[in-house]
Image: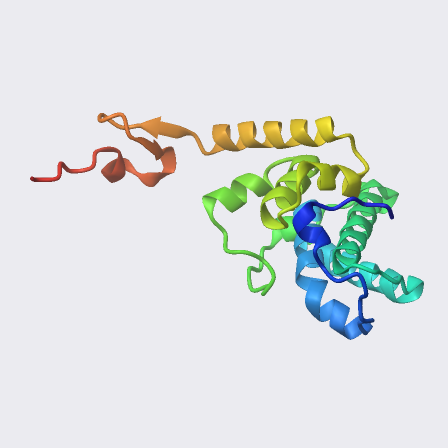
Length: 196
């Protein structure tokens, strides 16, 4: 994979010591699970994808000269596996149990907040772009390479996702002109005057 990484990511050593599969799993399982969960919105599917990605890693035994390439390989395989799952005939004809019963005891699942719920309500292509850009700190160019999309498409996905998030997390102004989220409640919309 001829991925050109940003300058700060190229400063890593050129000789990479081999890692065992267990070490790679310990280092990257959380990231792979988060991406899988972001794409599928299902803990069971994310667990299956986590397993599938690391089975593929063990079977292919890829060698990398830079640790960032290993991370990019794992992200790329996670994206491909989640796409394959979404397009499978079985998946299109089922309703996930997670939509019927929710168990929030997963250690990998982030705290539920208004922002988290708004991000999870976005279509998968927007959720993926947001996750890779904000949570994994990838640039637009790197996301384009990982997802196999033109840079302009990634920029469009990020722009549209931000617009939808702004709309879903509408910002209101109080009497003083201060911007506050609409879900903060009336007590924040009318903050008391500070006495001097």
